[in-house]
Length: 63
Image (cartoon, rainbow, N blue to C red):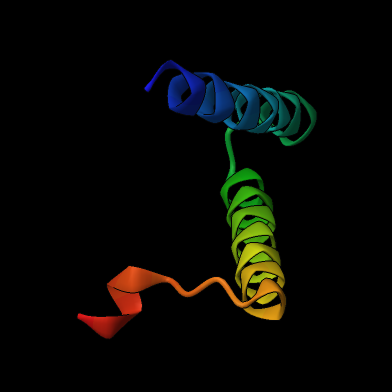
């Protein structure tokens, strides 16, 4: 359980810092949200393709 929380912390802190940097650079605009959303989508697709290449199935897709 602790390992899961530490892993999530390691993933979320860089994403939060990315959002803060984008907000500082672009200001509070839709560009910030668009770039951040694009990064999240690219990371999720990359994770999906990696897991698929390793033969790991996502259980929630079968529901």
